[in-house]
Image (cartoon, rainbow over all chains, first blue to last red; front, side):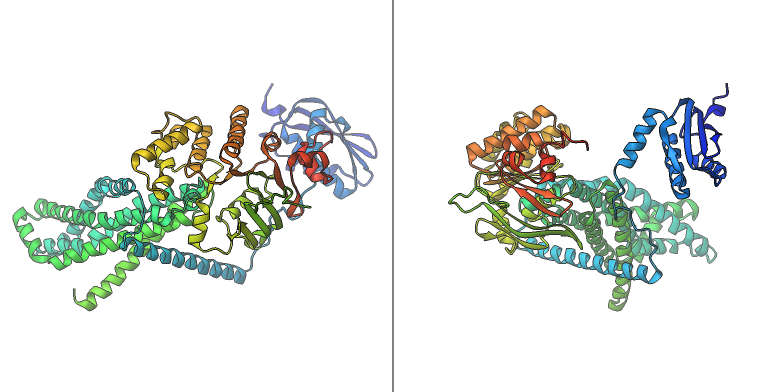
Length: 380
Length: 260
């Protein structure tokens, strides 16, 4: 016998003019035909004379929730038509489950309002939300400023072990990815420059282009973006999880400020590691540019290096390194802020991590723009 | 009369006056009035979602009350500044629902950290005291384990060891028996009784475990989600015997003898 054919079978009988008998047969499975299709059939059968709907289930082989759903929907239909439903013909198990489903009346007000907000309402809610989150951010920054002040007065407490672990996590362990990205950025810049400069026979200036771009801007920026994705997200997830598991509450009730204990070491670790990573990234980026120049443009390593040294000044170098340190603060703060704001569920931890990366990158790019203007005005 | 049923000459350990708890504009509980006396094992009971845990969070300052006041002794906790609150909280030990051990630290470090912070003990003495506290909860030998390496029940006990670190006068337990097998949960009850009897501690327990409520509790309040306030207070055994309130009676008898 074709199994599929035996699924969710039913037909109609008329015991007399006023009674419609629904005969259920075969195996009823949730995977079979949906009950909404049957319901339309039933509705067609309901003529004006019918006062009672009854069931016959003697040929029903097996059943699951699909029968319950069907009967509940049919019962609603009967109610609307003012028809009585006689459930006597249903298997006892089905009757018990139906009784259970209908035992507790729907709680008033429990159903979420599906009302669609108007455009203005939406704008209003968004504006209020933005205001709230700005307030939270300012509060966090204010508290961090106080914490920093305590740090300067050497009155903060956190575990040195935590700091060293964090330094390792956001320093040494970030080297492989920083190497890869920086080298490739150097290579890409050299290619872009080489194609243009070759037309004028000015290949040697590839070294200037790569050197200045990397040291002045790209080294700090790329390290910042890598660290925002890598470490900022990790900070948010770590702190967010600690919030979910009430570890932050435990800190608070025992009188340890989470900002001192968790946020401060993270900020310090990044303040010190970002410049080092940036210097390293500068070096690897220039190396990437040099590789292209030597392989494609027939420049020698010594010429390239001499030209690079000639092109970049110590001011450029320090400018870049300083910027990276600021980016470090921004990444750590946005990661920790999102972690602290995290809600109380596992999906909230994911949101916090996502939001930390977005906030971090926006903050870096914003700061980069500010630096560009300030450096221009100062003539650096 | 609700709350404050055992009248000693002593001042109560905690007094709550007209406390209202809310999340935003949603009022969870209003007008809670009760006293917790020294040496009480005070049960906060009520159905799921009635705000038992939120009340506990209000009592230890993790949530701000929407109205009303909380006193520790004669100290107004609600109006106190950060420093004053901290001073009060050093005399308080909290066991969170899942233990809330700091996952980056070993059990020893978890228990030792408060000692490091609030005492002048040297590292050896701290190690010794932390070992003792862990031994008290049956975790001798697990000093150097990380929380992730031990079972949920052990984490909870380690959390208790940490709460005991500074020998607080008041303990708060949030659903201590949740997720424990009957024997472990019974052992935890014994431990709570020991804390009270040997250290003279006051214990506040949030629970809906009937067996615990009757074994350890000598005072209680009952939070009702329907009316959004407390509807009974006093010794749980008296409540079982005399409470006329159908909700309380049903709760304390598990609704047995009636069709739910």
